[in-house]
Length: 544
Image 1: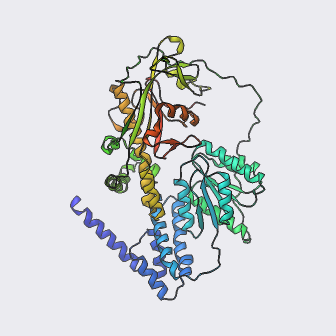
Image 2: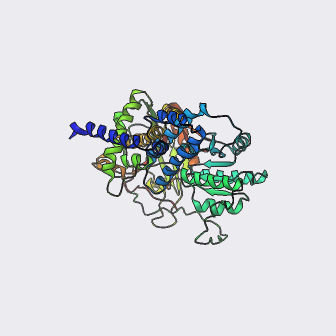
């Protein structure tokens, strides 16, 4: 069968090319956008101009119609994100080709959005997707990047004469920052100068359109994805221009009214849960920390979670039960090519810093002890964790022996990174309008970081002599089929990102090029940290 695969692909391409060529010119231009077909694009643009169609008319009446169709297909779930980005690439190429032939005008265009990721947040993929969709639907986008303070956002919005401000953030802390930014806009009398669009994984529509809208005198809306951002921009610009009947989508009403919180004194529950206390304490190979640089891709690529990569990062959506077929036809061929590329171009600088430390628990705290010198056995630092208010009342500290036991337990920490080169390579792809490649490289870098973290956790289990309890297959490993668990800061069992300060004091990740942002987030973005617990009952839980 493999003998004919290339032939079948070529025939399919030839059929599509013949179908495209048979369409009327203007319809063909629209179809090129929808299909993401670059081959022959400039010839068609030249032909259109030779027939007297003005470049601006080509863009506004034919190419943008194609992007409109793309948005509709995406909204109905009939077009997947990578193919949306291919369409955007063709749109960008077409506009760039036509620009030299366009007459200069004083027309301000469809409108301008100022885009920024808020202070302390280094994530930019969501914001950049909004940039791609808006800029390829005729809007001007001023994208000022990550970790932007409210003053930087306001200054850039004023300088660019922005019509709308868009703010993005992934962290829970970023939602607090966004609220503070809205308060600052209000205090400075700027609340009604710009409509605000907010988006990001940590936000909810209820938080934005109920809680924030209730305290912000201007217009603020939530955008679930880039295309909702486009629809909001369309509506905001129509209202600004006084288009008859134009209005913003109504704010989402709260289905369940908020109950006023009772004023009561919070009593911190520190009583240990029913977690077993008679668990053997593994011997560690060393105390303190070590660094490992240049970890070969072959060592950790086997831990790559394809489902998280293809569906979560790349946006490839297979119908129920069709993941394997989608992975085989779309996912794995592009993954293999991309892995070869990142290796050959030297984009991966995989590195690890990890270590083992003596410890005991006290209530909800984990106390890290000095392991050498005159201070040996005394408190070095401590981590405080939240305790569940129901169910088993779990707290991370419960998985370690208590101070009163007279015993000393061990805990491991690690920080892993892909380095900054792969982030820079992704940024270059974005700047060059190679949108699909940008999405795929960024997504791969995120999942390779997770794969390295999973691999090093396995290494730590090996060194603690507990790896004999591992699941025999990858899916089992990804489902926590092993003894203990790996908890990353910012997640439900240990939500306080600020405690990464203590972790960094212990491991000194600057030695592998990893630093903390002012909001306690690891930079480069393709980095992750964890506390590693050996207790058999330690699994993921939500400390609510």
